[in-house]
Length: 119
Length: 95
Image 1 (spheres, rainbow over the protein chains, first blue to last red):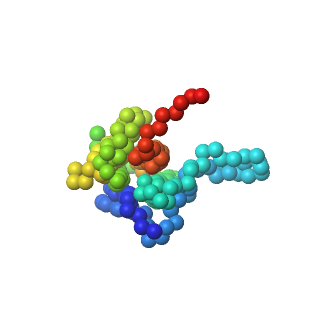
Image 2 (cartoon, rainbow over the protein chains, first blue to last red; image 1 turned 45 degrees about the vertical axis):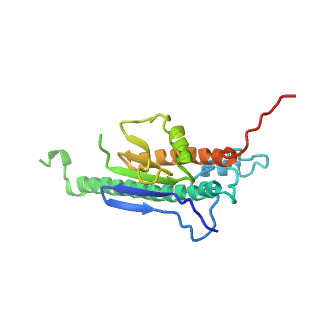
C-alpha cells in the first residue's frame, strides 16, 4: 500500500532545537482508531461489565480506496505519535519537578538550609 | 508574546482548494487561552496543497491539548471532503 499524502510535524523547545515527527508508512497498519484517542481508561473500567454499553463516538473506518481516506488514517497515527511524545515529555517534566522539590525538602530537613535566607 | 515551545503541522491535500477549505474551516475556532498558546493557520508558500498549522505555547501540555483538538477537527473535515467532494449534486425531494 502506498500513501501519497503523508502529514508530518516539527517540534522545537528550549532543549530540542528541531525534531521532525513523521508517521512510519513502511507498513499499512494505519486506522482511524487511535491509541491515544477514544475512551479514557476510567470509562473503560467503569463500563467493562456493562454488556449494553456501546461507544457511540467511535470513528468510522477510513476509505482505503481514496487518498483522503488514507490521509485520515495516517493523520491518526501522527496524532498518536505527537500525543505519546508530548505526554512522555510532560511526565518527565513532572518527575524532574518532583525530584527538585524532594531535593529542596531534603536540604531543608537534613542540612538546615533555608532557601529564603540563602542570600 | 513569544513562546518557548512550538509544533508545526504540515498536512498535504490533493489540491489547493481542499487545503484552503480546511484552513477556512479551522481558523474561526477561537483560542481559549491566548496568553498561553497561539495557533496560526497558513498555506505553504511553495506548495499551496499543504496546510500548515503552527502551535506556539508556554508548555508541552498546552501544545498537546491544542494540537490534539485541531487534529481531531481536521480529521472530521477530511472525512467530509472524502464523502462529499467530487460527488454529483443530488436534490432530495420530500415525499
